[in-house]
Image (cartoon, rainbow, N blue to C red; front, side, top):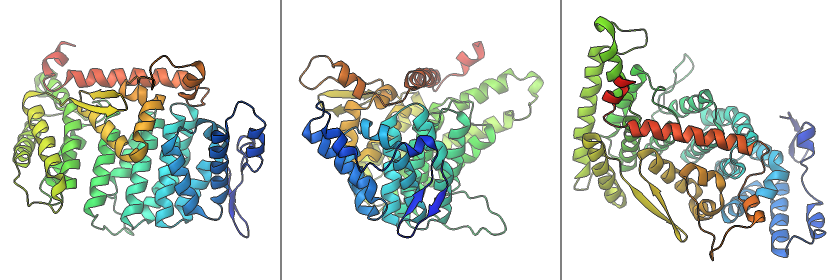
Length: 437
């Protein structure tokens, strides 16, 4: 994308031909008024968005808040199609030069932008253009709001645009390093706050739901489970809940069963490079037994451990479900009302994806679940049209992001979802099935 150039009263971005065609829209309202197919409300909304985009050069915080509200209240497909590059670049600029509040709003807009464009080239562009500036902003950030907002943005844009496993793993590493930094001679370790730890673990677990069980090697598996086990002992309840959800995803992947099959299938107890020894496998099972004991205790906690009692029932319910899963292999089933429909989940990875996106979207969750086709594909959810009947062709068009590569990307995504579901179905006691393969 274009380089940054300094001007007297505003910072703009140079751009290539594609970007320059997406200008800052001073003439757009009048052009829309000439279109008899646009109603007055739509024109006013688009005009407000155009004005807010222009205002990003001066009154950034107010403009960003307006854009967030607009993206939450409606699916801004046409606006994004015309102003995609301008909006992305201005928001990235805010993460470099803006205040903590501006950074929080700008990163939220970037996440909403990715969810709006859905699968395809635009989503990949959002990820590729954003990873480096977001990573740099994380390293320089000290405020909790700024850090947690960037973490959530990075997780969401990777979830949508990370078709390459290496892209997902890179984002997961960036996120994880916020609590386990790579220390160098000029790096001083700082103790992360409970809010940052919770955001890191939740974001990391959210992205872990998109990878297969071959991603976690034995060393990473042991180190991660050991660390998450220590988090179950922390006083902050949100940290314990985040750790529990991450452990649920790890064990649902069937990684431990994969290691068991490797050990049983090895000749004469020999261990290949990067493989698992019998001793390591025993240690992993010991870790699981320890985690199960911790989880069982947390499922019946009487309260008092952790300042916020409002999360006590959430913790108890989560860990009751996790105990049942670790001991018997049954994942919880959930039902979430979306308008007149119910969105069902039957795996840990689906439930954690849903909870994370629900938290990120906030007040825009229902609107997006009803009209965002990307989310329909993620959760295999087909909402009923309000008032009954079938969707018109125009409505079907509006339910799709304006990506020329959408159909190809959608097919790839659905294939990936089926693969993940198959992995999850292998499930808790998968060693026998894996041996037969």
